[in-house]
Image (cartoon, rainbow, N blue to C red; front, side, top):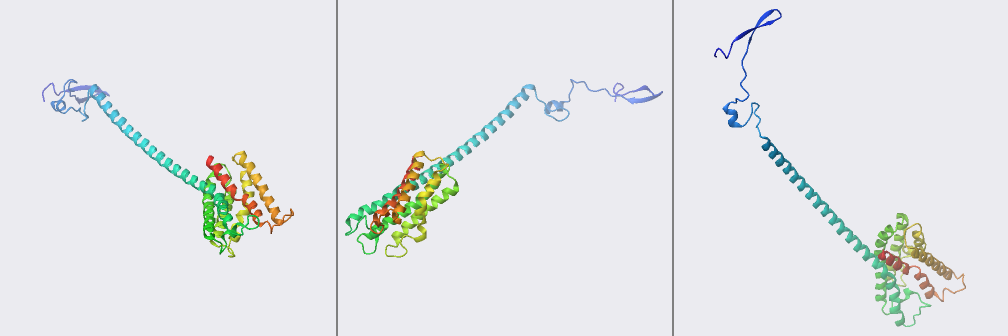
Length: 289
């Protein structure tokens, strides 16, 4: 090492002299050739010009922006796919509900239509004296066709109960009243199926206790319209229908002076008017929305 590269200087310190070695630092403008060639400073960190740093920042932000765009697009596609599935399911549900409600519209058509088609052509049959079940009794011409219509009306009533469940829910009818009303409708369907499957004089004709819904439907329909969002005209119809049912019950009891044994057919049809047409009326009201 040269004279100017290393020498000792005496420094006063606490009353004594301390020898300290001093080495001059390299000028700031001087850098080894290896640093210039590698482009890194003494810490090994790559050196960048402001332009290069700005370019890298723009590239990093650009990549992040593209990544965010891709994620946003993927989220939009997932949301669109979910919305599409929900729409398809809703359309299927509405289609199924509408189909079930249309079957409810057919219930009185099948019940009364079968009687109107067969009654006039059965010898000795009277709509005043004979009940509807007499058209399907064993030995009556065309009984099998009539019983098939009875079974079809029962199946339609059961199918309508599922449509009623959704319609009554839309009308804000409580689940207890809704359940009772739909069970009554299913009971009517089972009674009709039993009437067609076991024609008179079979003791199983009508289903016995299975047909209890025939007598509960008018009252349950009135209760279902209370504190609900049904149309006012439907609420008035339910009350009028209940009054018709009460009238039929009085006529059957003989309290009005009408002989129920002679007029069995007429009284039965009055009672049926308070049971089967309401199924179609409620179903049609639900279809109208």
